[in-house]
Amino acid sequence: MPAAEAPVLVVGAGPVGLVVACELLQQGVPVRVVDANRSHSLHSRAISVWPRVLEVLRRIDVADTLVERGHRVSGVGYYSSGRLLGTARLDRLPDTPYPFGLMLAQSRTEEVLEKRLAELGGTVERGVRLTGLAQHPEHCAVTLEHEDGATEETDVPWLVGADGAHSTTRKLLGIPFEGTQPDVSFAIADAHVDGDLSDRLLGYCYSPRGSLALGPLGDDVYRLAVSVPHPEDDTPPPLALFQEVLDERAPGHGVVRGLKWSTTFRVRVRTAARFSAGRCFLAGDAAHVMSPAGGQGMNTGLQDAVNLGWKLAGVARGRLDPAALDSYDAERREAAHRVTATTGRQTRWGFVSRRAQIAARDVALRGADRAGLVQRALAPIVAQTDTHYGPAPTPTELATELARGTGARPGARVPVLLGAVGSAGQAAGEESREGAVAGPDFPDGTSPGGGFTADGWVAAERDAFTVLLRWDPADSAAHRSEAYARMRAGAPAETRWTDLSAAPDGVLTRFLGPGPVAAVVRPDGHLFRRVRPDEVPAALRAARALRHF
Image 1 (tube, rainbow, N blue to C red):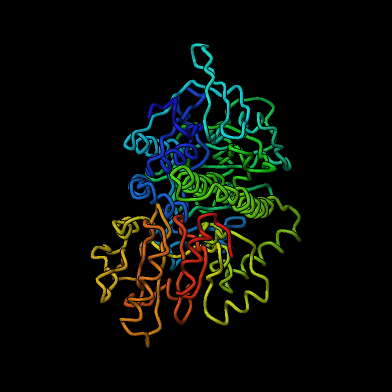
Image 2: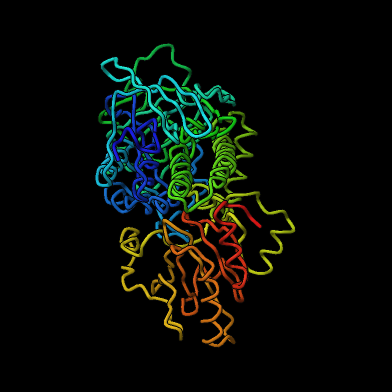
């Protein structure tokens, strides 16, 4: 299909727009990608890719390539006047195949994504900007202005605005961009630094005079982010500023040998009033901008892209009801609000200046670390492995989950390996996970597709729903065969079935809890519903519209 006739127009070719496009193309949905800029920016602010985002980027087969190109960190350290308060250790997270943070410049991430886009048959039309947008019941009428000044008017069934914080898409849709503007500015730079600074921890360093973030990029290059007074002009901050702050705030000794680039920006916190309007959607910075604390902004946008991409592709291919797209706004806007609240708290940690406030913060963080709370609560937040859709459990629901030994509530992230079983173990620096084990055949000759690895990772389908089955040990093979045949008869043909009967105990076993169970898992690895095996057909029917029953 010619690009001009593609059913989806993506406006913006940053990481978020590229992931949306790859998601669509990989599922056979043609897409057109336009970007007003003629080239990539080398001065990118985003440098971190967290474990959950690596998990979902497996869906488009780029996670392992990013891992090869990036620099791994084992966690995030929090310091006060050079003294360690606590550490959120990503390498101790038990429920992810990517137990580390990945540091690499956004421009390199974009290179990997654009290469994948080309492999899937896509391209980016640069120098093309959106100038007009009108919605109709069955399509969007758009006006595009090309680099030579020519104007193009065309209709598209769907439009995704991934065109940044100053989104033209959002403005043309008339969607308010609500929030606050903290009284905070940062000078940032990528710099060559000699010394004894850690190259395995991302460091947040607090002092009475402000904060410093240290992000190791490998080869003695660090991203430095320094809180500064609001700049009076656009003059790039000098090397001397960063050296002064390193001497004052860093947990160790470092000498800045040279700056690769530097700039200053003022923090803004905004969230769109809604992430969708009719046939148009907002993703990434077009939908939300947040404090850089914790490096969560791009990661949150990439989760937007995956959430929207598989749903939009499912609707375009007829596998999902159009109503399924209603869940995008509800799920991702709430997720963005949670991340914004967390990054806001971390930003405030770095700006307390009174002695009593500093003492209270330091005592609280140090005590939380000693009690294990930093690891149990903060590490999953940093890693974004805490991402869930739907309301958080009430105290009663939480007590029930703890009593039955499961966290398997609808919308929870399921600890599975997204996409086909492959090289994720090697990418994560672990032993190879070759030799996936298939589920046992049933007497009628059918067999649950898919399988699990020797160390307990279960593969989930990336383009359809996966049903994980665990039977009552007392059930006979004949009973299981009949039950499976009934479930399969009422299910979409593309459904993936995995029998957990022979799977080793592991994080998935603990997640699902004891007893017979059937878990319907979404293509993005989130739980749609945990049910009894006889309820699977009804659950799969409800899954077409992503409505709980």
